Length: 101
Image 1 (cartoon, rainbow, N blue to C red):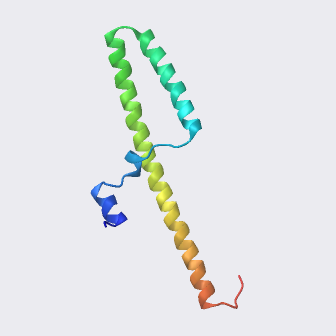
Image 2: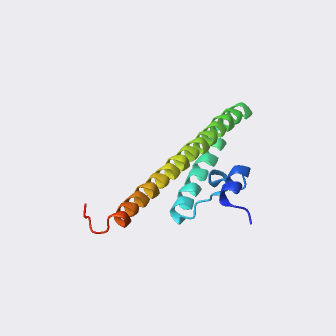
């Protein structure tokens, strides 16, 4: 069985690529956005306008991916700091069980 660290390193475990929201609210909003995008694409009409729209949307999707990556990194760093802080507090309590802060 591979470790989580090895899976992260090899790219098998990439939360930014393999995660799919479970919230029903998210999917309702997603359907609304898709309906608006379809209407907008239909109103654009010409192939030139559709290509422009596709280019803009592709850039936006890339930006969202970059943002999710940064959010993941921030959350991971925050979790590690929280664990470190909790572990440090536990060590202090174990070393000085009768001392109160």
